[in-house]
Length: 195
Image 1 (tube, one colour):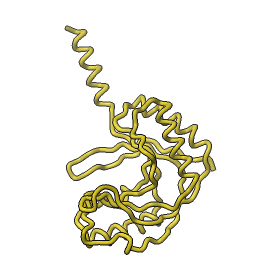
Image 2 (cartoon, rainbow, N blue to C red):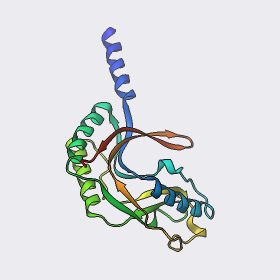
Image 3 (cartoon, rainbow, N blue to C red):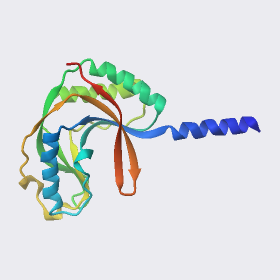
Image 4 (cartoon, rainbow, N blue to C red):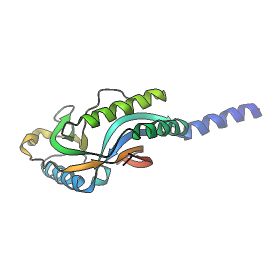
């Protein structure tokens, strides 16, 4: 009987210590202001769900449900990745969307940057090294501004995007917490680049 209870406790403990996680780049305040302005323009003409500006980020890899042990291992490998990089600059570029225009995920892209592409590849390799079965669809640099947006009443390419620069200073491992009102994000670890 005690063996059964012990086994049950271990399973429960393991389940409680998994969480939805992703690796992302944080966005600096000037760029967030521009993104918030763009989202406000879209929101004034379209129905949809629009996160607050403090939620803006650029996902490099969505890891899915991971354990705290996997998170620790991932952070150790990401620290090795971060040692290869210095802070670098990205610039906001243009608006776009995924999925169907009547229920779209609207995003702002950044100008093509080879350092960013290299970093995304290194983050993918880090997840493979730790054997996390993550979502490995090809990386596309984007910052989500809205979900389930009906674009039937707007032309995104008519909205001018100011090419605001922001500096990428490191990587953040985020925990995604799902609520009825939508997800919230909690930073679990921040890993800075070498200066």
